[in-house]
Image (tube, rainbow, N blue to C red):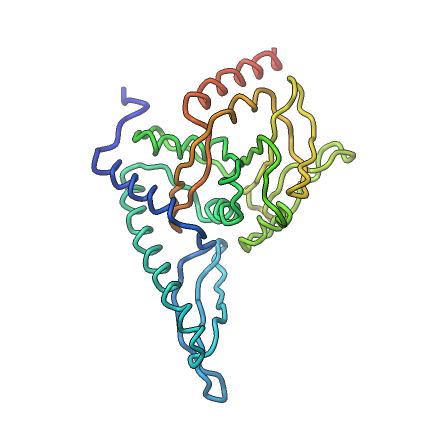
Length: 279
């Protein structure tokens, strides 16, 4: 019988550590492909620069950067070109780890996490939980297990996030280019706490907070102009956390996840709650 969990080779764990350092240095992540810088000319012959890239859903974009004769524009090109080169090098290293069995997230999930990262939500305390956190923890521990698939992104907020002038949580999600909308609650008098991509997609983002008891209240999150679902014992899970990189075909992004020991114990507690509720 094959082992459920096996260790990665040391060389691969060292490569993962290097990607972690890259993620820590990355102040802003691309929300789509790194793309490239291209020079164009308008009908009058004026040359200008654009940044060409594809977003998380595959739509192509061109961002106007400025004319070729503007020194300020030229000065901005080199840092952007360097970011693109570094991102492409990172993607190549992610492919190596993905082939070896490291957990990765899909493009849409990555773009969603990258947008929240860019607004510094994880830096000030927001925590990724659920299956994607489990995959990130496996990578950080240098082990792999049977593949899992999920399109749910669970974001927990332990307490008010001290960030001024934030856009709404929904607007942060929509910056990815993905058409998110609020999922109406079964009880129409309750505020929605989930956000889903339109159409047949199963991509869903749930906003969660600790519950004061073994109930599941809907709680206001004013700094994000949103509401969240309260979960029992979530405060224990969020009591200790760490920053780890999440790997994707689009690159790496630094997120905050629970420490593994709390993750494991919380899973056991929640499973007992489910057993009681189904009995």
